[in-house]
Image (cartoon, rainbow, N blue to C red):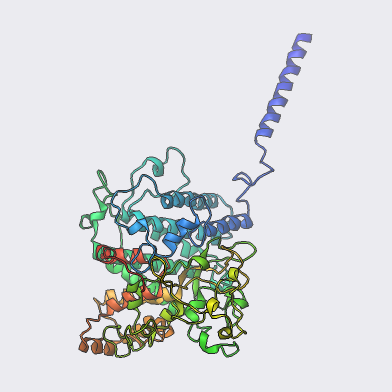
Length: 562
């Protein structure tokens, strides 16, 4: 009897201990936020989505491969025909490497998107978290599109992987399967973001329904023109057979045609334009309250990329005055500085080709315009030219504010011409073997408070209204087999040209140019505008490749501006 009681007590004790162990093992960790205790409410889902907004190549990015050097190369069109700095993406290297930082980093960032989407599937109130879920779908599309442009067909990462996942061991999806996945994600994002608008977020950098539509317009223009000029399926040699080389030619059911892509690009861009939500930045056209008002006239394009506080520009404007940005990465001096040597490195140095691409004020190229003054001295070529050129490329002996670290930052109420000529007058560097000899001031801050590298905190614009105008014009012209009406040009491309003080593109200008021996075309001028307006914004390589002219454009020797 006593033995039975002892056994009973021991069994009972073991059950209690086992139960305690089970309870202990099932406890949620208290010292860190993990999946076990996260994704329990709207605030946590939004916090996860907020983190996705920093996992992107803007200025210096999160992640060990989101370094400043990697970001420079793809943000500023390094290696292209427009920028003097070279890069291995287009330097003629034919052998593919065994690894790629951009490839690895993109898949690391994709994991966070999939994690949020998967956790949302079991959330009790899906409508409550529609916003952050839509943002996760947007970023999954964003990263897949980045990979598509760089590699073509890739392994799709549509779920959080483990060691046996297809994304680890499976074959590459064809470019058409990748594009279909991108479009599906963007459609889901647009549906979920219907209540997340520029108005509801105060355009604070969060992905909105307008950003999702704008990005889809970019994707559709890219793929529609890629397939038009590079071919579809086996007609595109970059696809390979999917076995020995390349990702193959599998085309999903219901895949859009070239016309479908271009129509979607036109429709989406038209929706954004017609909404009236955004406007081109024109805040620094006339600055009567500064000490040198003539010096700042027509410099809105330059200051658009350098807006911080009211002391960052002669009009005293802040980032809130930027109604042109549709999707931007937000920075500030306290929480998120650029951590890139933007101002001192001057990453947007122009090639001679780019300088010569800028039109004269009459809308004609330099080789036929009667307004062009030639190359008599170092400044004559800048007379009567597009304001966007002179805003970012100072003329010799122009007075310009410098870098705060050297004590030459701006004080707009001071007459700069009364200051030291050695410090404030621009002179091209002709004494050293440099790529260009001259400056490219786009993305160069004039803030006097910047006392060291990486302290700039201007926002990085990833999609802006000017691009949407150009998407509309290009898609419309492609659908019109190379023609576009004056009305369509006036609601899109000509608004961009007007900021540069350039005459509108229309049938009359085309006719005039041809009488002067210039083989001007609508499509050629639209492509020119993309090069000029969007230079050093990370779109040039993709543009030239989708037009099917990469060998022709990138195969020539680059020259600096002098």
